[in-house]
Amino acid sequence: MSPRDYELVKGEDIRDARSGRRKSDPRPRRLLVVQEEARPAVDVFEEDMVMTFPHLVVREAIALVALTLGLVVWSIFANAPLEEIANPLATPNPAKAPWYFLGLQELLHYYPPLVSGIILPGLTILALAVVPYFNVNLTRAPLWATDRRQKLVRLTAAIIAVAALFYVSGASPVWPIIGPTLAVGGLALLPGLIGGERGVLGWLSTRSLAFWIFVWFVVVAVTLTMIGIFFRGPSWSLTLPWVDGVYY
Amino acid sequence: MVSGEVFSTAARPGGFGRRVWRSIVRHGFPDTNRNRSLAVFSNLFLHVHPVKVRVEAIRFTRTFYLGGLAAALFVILTVTGVAVMFYYHPSVPRAYADVKDLEFVVTAGVILRNVHRWAAHAMVAAVFLHMARVFLAGAYRPPREFNWVLGVLLLVATVFLSYTGYLLPWDQLAYWAVTIGTSLAAAVPLVGGDISFLLLGGNQIDENTLLRFYVLHCVVLPLVLTGLFAVHLWRVRKDGGIYLPPEATGRATRVVDGEPTP
Ligand code: HEM
Image: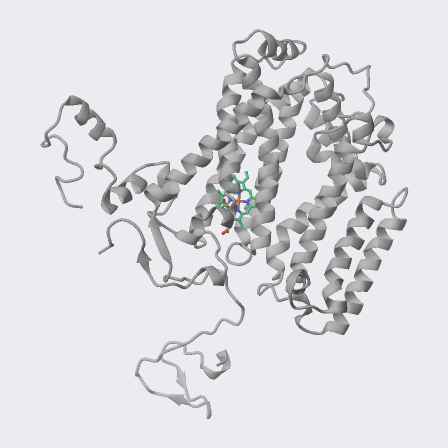
């Protein structure tokens, strides 16, 4: 059944589907609108329900108490850092931002501040915000379900293009991005190359393109941040946390 | 509503204490579905929830309660933050001395500060993980797209809230971490200098900056976050509740606890 089998009826203007002539048929008609895509919010009434009180409220209370307890216990054993009073004349080496900005600070190592501090984070936030408006994979179709060869070519080209972009555009090759790009890209390509229906490969083969792009974003962000937190020391040189400790 | 049953308390037996209790909580012990419903929708704080929820939606592994934990962390941060404010002056060098006092003089001050600090870090992490959970579940898709956008704004607000707090101890860590961030603002083409001046309240990080960050951290951003969160949570309900994948829906209607609903 497709929406074309049904006719749009405006007020009393009822037309014969074949001849297109107006019919003066006052009988009520049933109209059917068939939604093509999978909507996540169809009303499903056939579901097991429980009373919010006590089922949800008790769970929330337990979560809140567990969280509070965990924080207090943690705070008994771990002190928040407090260094010497601020001194504008004594720049520490390294000077690090809070941990959640260390991915960006790592990028500062490769790109000028305008790119690493404004353009890239700005684009990231913009990209995140518009994700749902570009019909990003409403049905979340498995990437490899159709057009396998064409997709293999395109995806490989895209991966190489992204890796190349980050190889040439920075002051030095941006390995913290190139590495995850090749790793995640390789995983995405794997089921397309060698197939597989069961186990890990089977699971990978049912992932959608949107999934892979998001995983790529997360892995890149986490890699950059981890390197910034644990592997950067004085003058942003590479250090090993298990040898030199963690600089912050 | 059946008159005299729920709201009239004067005619009921029981002492003064019971009368006072009933003037506050207008329903009986929540052991019937009716009183359980009243417990939720006659309570300002609980009425953000529907009276009944889907079993599948409150399963821990569905959401890992990450949004709820982020909200709980915000509440903890508000409570500990207000307590810390009683001991803190946003001025140089008093701010640093106040934090030192909190560490060494104020009773349990060090725990108070620790909880505030660690909860702040945890909240940034929880919000990020919540975002990842929502994406991987596919819960950003229509009709929830606007709530996702609200979420992105919440993420930005959370990070700024944490970041403005970072300067307040006025130690070397705070000063230089904020120097790195604010120097980036100056890199914006054309208006970078103006943005930087606006943010710092001058040309360098000094007492003016501390005051600006203090006001942003203690007043402006918490209000922004509270407002965004209110809309966010409201939208979760208006968009049909927690998103459930097709395989988790579609069983026969029944209430699996308490009395059967009429
Ligand atoms: C301060 C930050 C935030 C708080 C306190 C918060 C709170 C919540 C809560 C309590 C829920 C109910 C379900 C759950 O716990 O998963 C929820 C759902 C949701 N959140 Fe957030 N959230 C925040 C940030 C974000 C971010 C950063 C995003 C995405 C960019 C986001 C997008 C969503 C969406 C789309 C839903 C609906 C999920 C569904 O239907 O399954 N939120 N949020």
